[in-house]
Length: 96
Image (tube, rainbow, N blue to C red):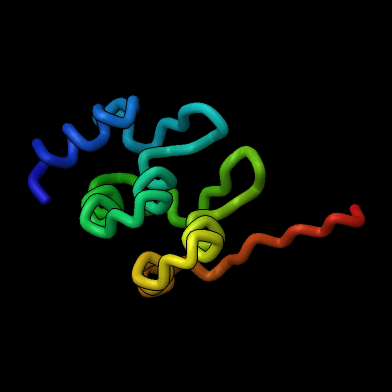
């Protein structure tokens, strides 16, 4: 993916391409959005351009990118995340 294509993708979703780790509403980053959309190409670009730590960053509800991909039954994105270091899972305890 080219820098221009990545910036267009980020801008189209309301994020700032100069701050790829800046969270928006609900503590979502462009990385979370890419996981939600199952866009592995943008995940590659984000990972290589400053957002590698977001692979373990949880949103406001405590959901990690890997948990999000799992909830969406997106095996390709789950595999990509695991191959890049994601290992945590969402732990929800309704009795807490």
